[in-house]
Figure 1 (cartoon, one colour):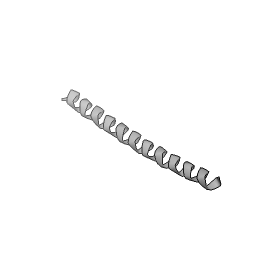
Figure 2 (tube, one colour):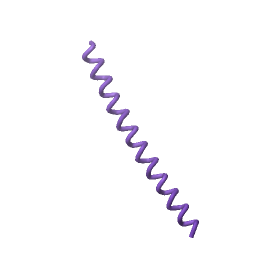
Figure 3 (cartoon, helix red, strand yellow):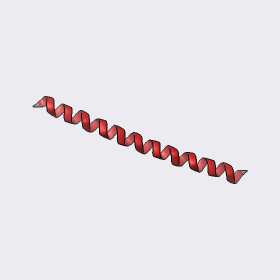
Figure 4 (cartoon, one colour):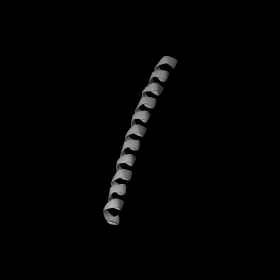
Length: 43
């Protein structure tokens, strides 16, 4: 019983990690777009 519980927790942690990585990637892409737009405005 404890083994299945730990496996469940591992999978949960994995999915949380993947979700946070996706959010970070999305934020980075948005930030990149803003920087590019700022660069165009400055030019």
